[in-house]
Image (cartoon, rainbow, N blue to C red; front, side):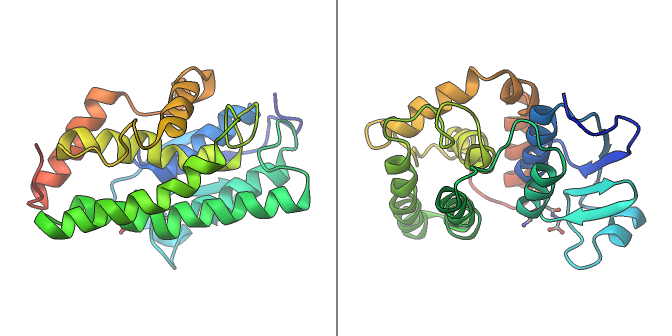
Length: 227
Ligand SMILES: N[C@@H](CCC(=O)N[C@@H](CS)C(=O)NCC(=O)O)C(=O)O
């Protein structure tokens, strides 16, 4: 359980199917921080969201005792700094820097390449699959000899990389393209199994069937080809 007083107000503006919002749920659950969840409609943004995140106008936003914090990676660090139990970032400065580096790689490179896999068709999609795989290979190498990116337990990079495990790898079924085939990425597949055996993750990831239906509906709306 978190060390700070339970009388403090912790509210998360999020969206059930968002990988960024789910990251925050994982971190709060891991720390044992009770919070109120406010489901947001990102197609019709509430005045509260616009007021709390006027720069990006995006979820997730964490509101702690009235103070808003935006951007999932920033929020994760805030949570780790505020509730010190069950640390998610490593203590060693070099390991901390590496964890931040990998988190940026996931959000700024892998996520962008994976979005192209979803958004393109034909040869452009094939090229995007190759680009995504090249980047994922860095994560594959990081996992050798480890249960989680964080070592023996779930950490910052694991939480960030749930985007790969539960969004990219679920979307594969809809695309009919294996972006992360087990033959090329045995370590990532072993890691996904470890994640699925973790109680916090089990509690915090969206239910598969509803999630796939949501992703399929979004792809159909954007006229993207689902299998
Ligand atoms: N860099 C942001 C990304 C968050 C994000 O993409 N949120 C999406 C939902 S999954 C959103 O709010 N989209 C609304 C919009 O783009 O207008 C983070 O890490 O928090």
